Length: 250
Image 1 (tube, one colour):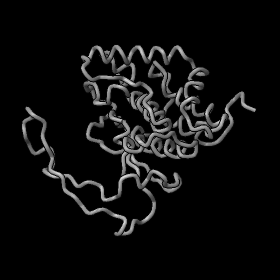
Image 2 (cartoon, rainbow, N blue to C red):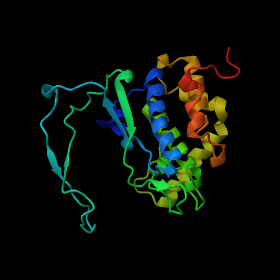
Image 3 (cartoon, rainbow, N blue to C red):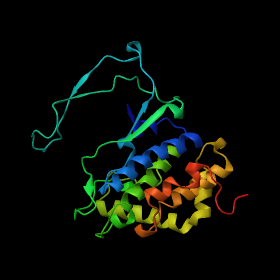
Image 4 (cartoon, rainbow, N blue to C red):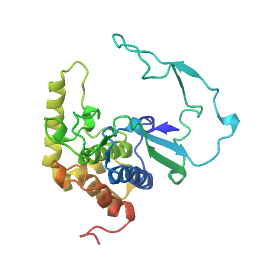
């Protein structure tokens, strides 16, 4: 098992087939959650789990190693966390060159999932993946997951964050200000310029048609107003995932 954070530190963008397959599997999981009335509220690369659909021989596995859980200074110890964690026995990097057709992708860490009827404070989504409505005390719903998904898929495809926010040494208000500025630049781009922005970061062989479809696919998630973002059901029927030509394409 590996998480998406590990899968995006290999310094390379991914091919269209990989991005299409991974996006579809994540969307199927999120669609199920939303259909059940749940908001994940913490979609990020570290919470996307990858495994390969083949048996690993014992010789390929590393020795099991238990690591003690260390509490941060000033945090009161309680029974909310285990005393030890078992690290993966799969060698690091084993999934790097795995065929995307052999990968199974699942959404993990449901610890902060919420019912869509709950009146809850802001979610724990990393600041760079937070939707515009989460930067101010506004009402929010499952469409915050859709925004985070757009940021997440962009990162899995290009190996770089959509919004490179530097938070070290900055106050929360300063970080929010930086993110608002980056979002404003995104909205000013518009769909066509956004497609150019993406094409400069994708694999050379991604393909012109796939690039246009992928840009449109992400743009449907990255709308400023929550009500303008596409639902999981609509995204699963998008041309990028099912191979149809978009309107206006030959």
